[in-house]
Structures are given as C-alpha cells and as structure tokens.
Image 1 (cartoon, rainbow, N blue to C red):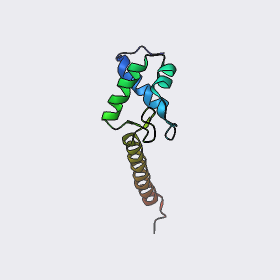
Image 2: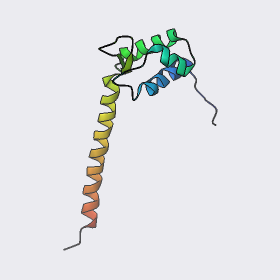
Image 3: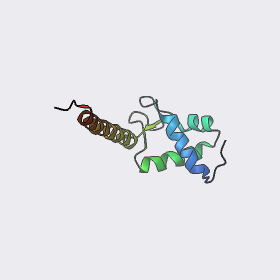
Length: 104
C-alpha cells in the first residue's frame, strides 16, 4: 500500500462517515452506530455530522433527529456527474457517426 502523503484523521473520518451513510437513506444511522463502525468516540462523529450538514452532505432524518442520512447535495453532485457523462457520450456518438458514414 502506498504511503499517505497527506493525513487529516478528522477529514478522513468525515469521508468514511459519508460512505457508511450510503444505503441508509430511509432509516439513517445513529452517531453511536457510526462511531462503533469507525472505532471512534460518538462526540467525534457528532461533530463530523454537523460539518457535513453545514455543506449539505448529511442531514438528520425528518422523523428522527437522532439518526442521519446522506444530504441532498451529494446526490445532486452525483446526478450532475451522470448528466455530464450522458452529454459526453452523446457528443462522442455524433463524432463516431460522422466518421463512420459511407462516403457518397
């Protein structure tokens, strides 16, 4: 494994929180569950979740403020990425079509 050049344990933990939240959009996860999975203190996770909430990447469940899920911003970024890929494919298909037509 390559040696890490840059290391911020709190940032890395925040990214891992995001990865753990994926797939729990309806029931969410409690900070204690995230802390257990990441082998850290629940207060660290609560701080991480608040930071992620500030930028729209995580949010508490509307039905249970003690449980968290991915925020809309991350999904919006993923959707924008997918739309960009679709546009790139469309443009590439146009070029391919232009160069593979039979000359008249």
